[in-house]
Amino acid sequence: MGDSNQSSRLTWEGCSVLLDINDGERLVFARLSPAATLKIGKKNCSLQPIVGCPFGSSFRVEDGKDGPYLSLVVATEGGNIQDEENVTCEELKDNRALVDNNTAQSLTGDDIDEMRRQGVTGDQIVEALIANSTTFEKKTSFSQEKYRLRKQKKYAPRVLVRRPFVRSICDAYFRKYPDRIGCLRSDSLALLLSMANVAAYSDVLVVDMVGGIVTGAVAERLGGTGYVCNMHLGVTPHSMEIVRIFNFSNDICKRIVRCCLNDLCPGQNGSHAQIQNMESESVNQLDVMEGGISVKENRTTVDASNKTAKRDPTTNKAIKAGEVASEELIGLWKERGFSSLIVAAPDLDVWSIMQKLLPHLAYSAPFAIYHQYLQPLAECMHNLQREKIAIGLQISEPWLREYQVLPSRTHPRMQMSAFGGYILSGTVICTSESDVQ
Image 1 (cartoon, helix red, strand yellow):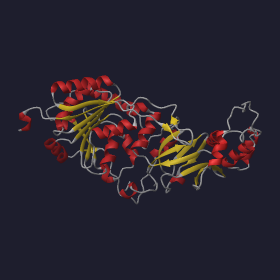
Image 2 (cartoon, rainbow, N blue to C red; image 1 turned 120 degrees about the vertical axis):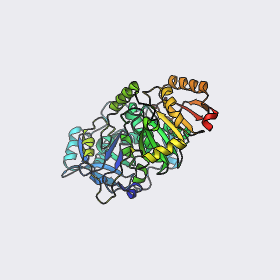
Image 3 (cartoon, rainbow, N blue to C red; image 1 turned 180 degrees about the horizontal axis):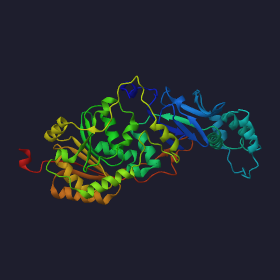
Image 4 (cartoon, one colour; image 1 turned 135 degrees about the vertical axis):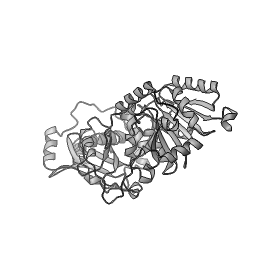
């Protein structure tokens, strides 16, 4: 992809998008191509109408002569704004007199099928259902809105095109496949970057065994400055498939490199069989399609189309993220050390990793380690205190509460995650006079 496409507000052929179906009911990652399709219910819709539209555009599914298709929804001003008198009247209404006996709706399923055969749109069907409901006017405005949204999701589903960035990608994976990213929540990822002091022109050493989400987050924050080095301890590199969803420009992709621990430590022969076996198992668990990732139950359609995605011939030649680091870079890191370290390797022993990686950090460099469980971090913290090679050690437990913010009904969400893992952070110090010399 070209650098101009990276900063564009419009989608382009070959870019990755996050499709939000029915206001978060389903989240789908897809790569736009002429053959890409999206399945909503029993309908397959081409994604071609999305190409060239601004990120944030909304589409509805409509039936045409050639089958279902995505139609752009034009935003209207105004909305459902109520004045004070209506709000006062609504406070006096309630739903106690309503009885759900399946007799309130006069339209039958056959009537709705006949309307569809006549080419009636989904929004018109929703309005017909509201008009033929004997209890709709008796409901409160909140209940009416819920009824309208429920029918709209069924008869007039909508698709919101979102730009993939670190928070949206992390939230989508955490909701559907948390094990693929080590149950790393978006607030935990933000705290991880903050504890490691990831800033412009930093050289960040990363051990990322959670699909590449940490590598992508660091690269997004660096913004084409500095380097992010994805370190692997064995022969097989870690999976970085999630990085491809970010739509990074060439300037950012060339700042994402790979490096083996043996390249920084020639004296080590890399005969850590247990580490290599655990790494290979982790890579096998990250079963991610090459062209993109579909976060939904049925991933066949979008994944198959992603493999056929083509790059725009008018753009510059794309640079693949995760190339092997050059000898000049490795030599520079050997001399100066990395400015910070981030570890997200739930399947490996934390203390063993830190023993190998801490010598490659510059003095006073911060580090942050993420893990799902507390015990491995507590043991590592104890060993670091005993060896006196780090200061400012602390274990943080991120906590997040989601709120529903709506008129007269703002409250914490009924279903939310109460667990965000743990983060061990600290600062590396000089341990001997010989090291200073």
